[in-house]
Image (cartoon, rainbow over all chains, first blue to last red; front, side, top):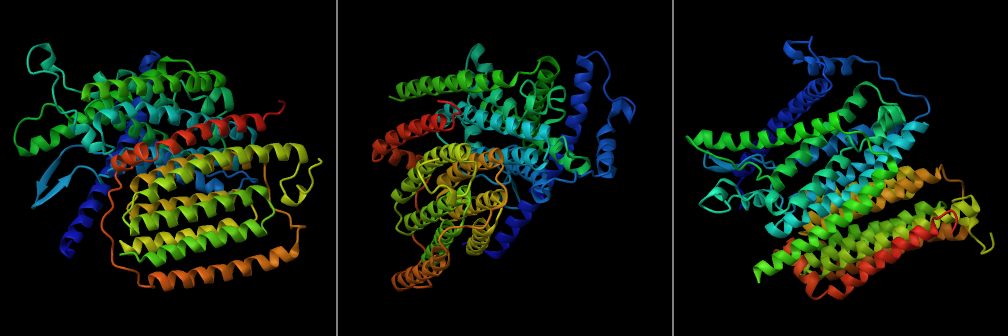
Length: 354
Length: 100
Length: 163
């Protein structure tokens, strides 16, 4: 039976975790914008932000202040309730999926086992997909409520793109689920904790799922880039195509919310990719007790950073897909590839366990 | 714990609201949404009984109801789109004869 | 635990009233999404995590997107007053209330308002549901997959501009 003191402790622990994780996430989103501008700048042989603070490190702060003080222009004929709802919905959904992501192992504090995760649902991965599928509404509703051509087209195209690539996103991870046998994110990582062999070259390689499921990883990551509306799949919000797509008519704080939710989605997708395919927080852990708790979080952050860097790198390198090419790619190539992956994986898993 | 009768009453309230909407509304899409509301009320009753009788078959049935509702929604909305294209109006009262 | 159920129930009922009473289809659709989400929360409380997630992913995340996109495409505006049978509209809802009262009495007599004691925990993990699905229910499962294929083909054919 839960006593009132352990319920109190549970509440305190959860509140502290939520506050810390939210703070870290917001800061990392802010500095992700800085990183993006710097990296794309250097890819294009120019410096990114350079003036505000050393190497432009205070640029996100300046951007934040700008968003807060900018004039909030609302066009006259918009559908007010939905116009206000859309960015908040995007923001809430983007930040909700962080609640099931484990950042590290668990440690003991004052006699209680504290896991570095807000909550460990046994259907954790499905929860992330559920929240992603609810995020489609923010785009569709933003486009529709703006009562203008370009946002409407951008919104319709973007929501069609998102629901098409959601299927490949979910199917790409089914191989991993078959290998791990569970939807809980913590357990999927823990099953990757072994080495391929104890001697020779293979003893340096951990048993990460990316070696077992390379096709699944490619399908998942491609679908994830499409799902977060990033280049090369960002036709719905490309400046040269549709002004700014579904968020054309938004300004100041509501635009900032769309912006933040796009980066938060990038972070979430990268976290899921690390957890499912790259062993999450697993890495060499050594040293005293407190170092053993901090090091896994550091490895996790490093892996997520590699994915985010890859996202930004792709943005600076690849051109944009045309809309019909995009939809053809999602339905006629990625979906059959994901299904083939499931077929082959299920045969191999059944054969190996027989 | 949650009393079973309260869950069943909630299911019945949702079903009654859905049926009332089905009768009084004129826009065909809203009527369709009230049908979905009724289906969800029934799903809730299935889950409640599955929980109460500790029997997983109730949840399996909900799975099939959701899948069939998806298929029905797709075909129904396609019919509504075709209807709108041919008659130009989304009111049920205007769909009162087989001739256009 | 119990109080979460009542909060979700109140939200569901208010949103359902919104679905039925609003004159603009977009608001009805958004309220229906709220109903679906609160029902998913109730399913979680009643020990059905997989079905709750399936409800959000499939019902609230795909079927309702279809509804919202169709409403936007057809530009459905405010509803005009009905020209239909006034008798049906005036007699229908009270008869439904009578139906509800009948059912409520039945439930009260059968299960009592306080309800029976908490039942044993149900093993509703995805593994258990999957095992049942692919053993006893494999035929309905395959038939529904064919049903979905037929529905996809039907929707594409019906919504074409020219056959």
